[in-house]
Length: 337
Image (cartoon, rainbow, N blue to C red; front, top):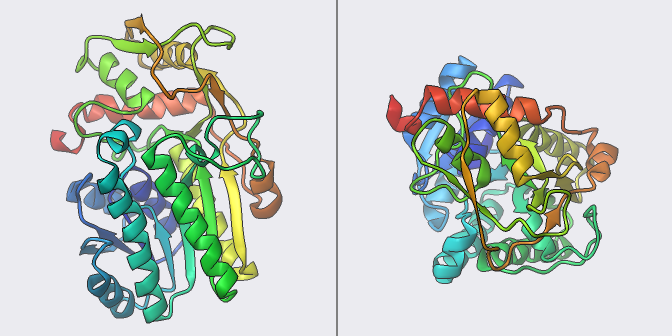
């Protein structure tokens, strides 16, 4: 049995689909602060298999330990966390409490229940302002906002934990920019309120929920002046977790890898590709740069290929087509049903 914390969220649901397809039994542990139970039902529809749902908060060690013991959990994929950069600047204590304290409580519960295999959802934000590109795992670590710092703190905790007890099997996966949706169109990114990420905002413009996109700066030193990022299809990202889990179960140790494509696409590249995939216009207006945004950020993903045999398989066309299938079929997210 594999536990997925935050398993009802955008990335968590896609991981659950891949786990179930690979024959694993899955328990989702989620408090639904940023997700909906409907998402779990959709996972079961896609998979044709049931999973176990436990409603709980990762800051509750009693509930965590009970779930780990009751369901004989062998490994945890830890996706539960608040993830909006802007919100983290406004509410730093909430981010440190949920992300850092919640992870400490999870680790304590795992230790008490005798579970020592963990795959952690980290982020490329731990690299801070890029000193060189593409970003390798050896790039110096820093962070420019409380969200990124919470991820970096958790990474430090995990490194210290493994140093103190080598029986722990820990995978740290540094995500770049997850986009897209399951090809069925049944699950996808379902932001509450104004989307924090580019592609969901573009999709909402294309489907008519928003009038236009704000492009934050067109004077960066990039090919078209707009910010460049490494976008990765969420199903490729989910597959990376299964590969990391298999590696840890066989090799043990402490694993740290980037999950990205190694390709950088600009904001305007994404706008153009989405307009083509959807057949809908995506009007935009250029606004001044936002504080804290970097010109370009993309991965060197070869370590994941070397260690895990993993590489991203889906390109920009699939990312946009799958995101549009989800958005057009569920214009109001899971509330559409």
